[in-house]
Amino acid sequence: MGAFYFQGGFAMKKLTGIVIGMTILVCLMTGPSVFAAMQVAAGVQHTVGLKADGTVVAVGNNESGKCNVASWNGIIQVAAGWEQTFGLKADRTVVAVGCSIDSDYGQCNVGGWTGIVQVATGIDHTVGVKADGTVVAVGYNGDGKCNVGGWTGIVQVDASYYHTIGLKADGTVVAVGYNAFGQCDVGGWTNIVQGAAGSDHTVGLKADGTVVAVGRNNYGQCDVFEWDLDGTPTLVSLSSFAAVPQSGRIIIQWTTASEIDNAGFNIYRAESKDGEYVKVNDSLIPAEGAPTQSVSYQFFDDGVKNRTTYYYKLEDMNLNGTSTMHGPVSGTLNGKYLDADR
Image 1 (cartoon, rainbow, N blue to C red):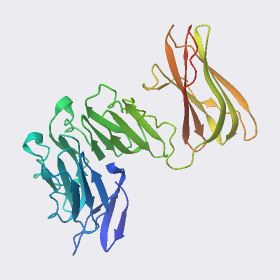
Image 2: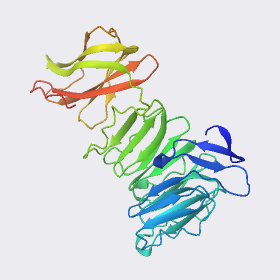
Image 3: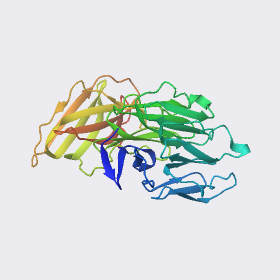
Image 4: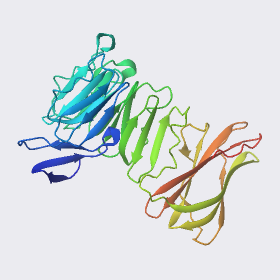
């Protein structure tokens, strides 16, 4: 789960991919004091801060007592939910405050937890990753969002209002809970280093810095496919990209203005703009361009139905395995061509 290194005279282990975008440092040796990675966490109406000395501060709505953290010490991670706050201690136990009578679904019943290396909380349930890669959960189990007992090899979790996700050591992701918007459809994800669960969507950061997302996209919250967080996108410049219906099939056409270190292209198709995109080419479409050479490509998609609108994304693959998504563009077979949505 990461490399060992020394900080402040303590052997520490780095747990990568932790929710809230922070790295958590877990003490593996005892000493005169605890060194924590500074961190903040936000609940619905309160905010929590973890100090470098392992103490915690909080501000905001305190009707349920969720800000009563002044006595905490030895904390190495905090998590904030609806009416609850959690602190992971250096001895791998968990403390909690909050959970008023009106909001108590058992999500604060973590007093018996041991061996915990990360904790996450949603609106009414709480999830913890154990040092052995198994997961525990307490609270309201609507739609099975606490059904994590069979999970193994987990290095990070996140808990949302209605679903729970777990990142495995092999870079794949598992999910349970409410799935009406496809927010749990993460079974095909690979090379993920961090996962995050929103109310009705799920986002994954890949090792190459690109981002994937599934679930509800009513506010564009899943429009992350062209993100490249490591700052090194593939060096392919498109001058055109279109989906053209013709004679019982749709022709995907694109022209590159320049290509540098490009291995080739993949085509992905979906039946809705925010739907699940599936690769339709059997093998990588070889690159033919050059830094100063414009090249036109086309791909014939014969697996389409009459009077159905299809959406397409174009992926260019770098020789080093980095990829960038373009699109989507859309077209309707035997109907009016729809302009690209960029």
